[in-house]
Length: 351
Image (spheres, rainbow, N blue to C red):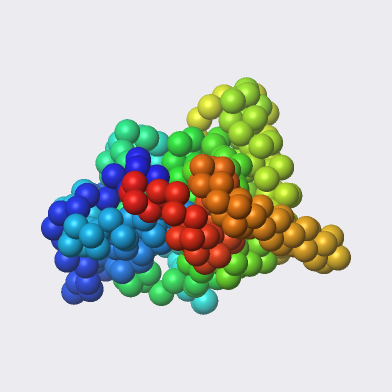
C-alpha cells in the first residue's frame, strides 16, 4: 500500500476541469499535441478508488483526513503535457474508434505499419509523451492515458462501443490495469508482448459492478512474438487468470519468428480486427457456473477473515484481510473494510 499511496503526493496540484475546445487536428499523424483538459476520471481521488484496492484506498483517505490534506497529483499539469494523435482520413458513420496507447518508451510514436489498419478501422490513435516504463503508473502513465482519452473524445465524434486501451511491453501491462479498472470506458485491451494475471497483486479486482462489465463486454487481445519467451509466459499466466475469473472475451496470436518488439502491420491488423469484430460465442452455462464458484470464493475468504476477527487473532486477521485486498479487491468490499475496522489490527493506522 505504501508504495502505491506515495504515487499521489500530499500537496497542491493543478485544478481539474474543462478547457476550451481547441482547433481540430489534421488527418494523419499530429505530433507534440496539447490536450489540456483535465477530466475528473483522471483526478487523483477517482484514480485512487479505481487503481488501489479498497483497504489501501480507505487507509489513504483516512490518512489525508487526519493530516488535513487533499489527494492531488502534482506530477501532471495537463496543459504542459504533449501527445501524438493519429487521425484516419475517413470518419465512420457511427463515429471514430479510439485506441489509447500506453508506450514503454519515453518518446511517443506510432509503430511502423499500424496506420493502414487504423485507417481501415476508422480508429484514432493517441499516446502520451514521457509515459514510458521509467514513469510511475499511478502518478503519470495511467492519468495521461485517461487525459488522452477524454480530450480526444471531446474533440471528435467517438463511438463509445469502440474505445480501447492498448500498449506494448510494460505499457501493455499498464493497459490491462486500465481496462480492468475502467471497463465503463474501455471496451477491451490490446496487449502487445506484455500481460499479467488478474486477481494477483498489483492487478486486484474491481467492484462487482465493474467486474461484471469487464466479464460481459470487454475484449482482450494478446499478440506476442514466438521468439519472446518471457512475454509468452506472461500471456499464459494471464489467460489462466481470465479463465478463473470468468472472462470469456480473450483471443491470442503468436507471431512466427518475431522477437520482443511492437507488432508488425499484419499482426496489428489481426489484433484490431479481433478487438472490433464479432465476439466469440460464449458458453453461458459454463460462465454462470464459473461466476457462482468465484462468488463462493469471495464469501469463503470473508468468512475466514471474520472468524479470525471474532476470535481476536489480530495478526492472522490482518494477514488475511490484506491478502483479500490484494487479490479479491473490490469484490470483497465493503465487507472487507468493515472487518478491517473491527479487527483493530493496524491496517488503517499505519497508512
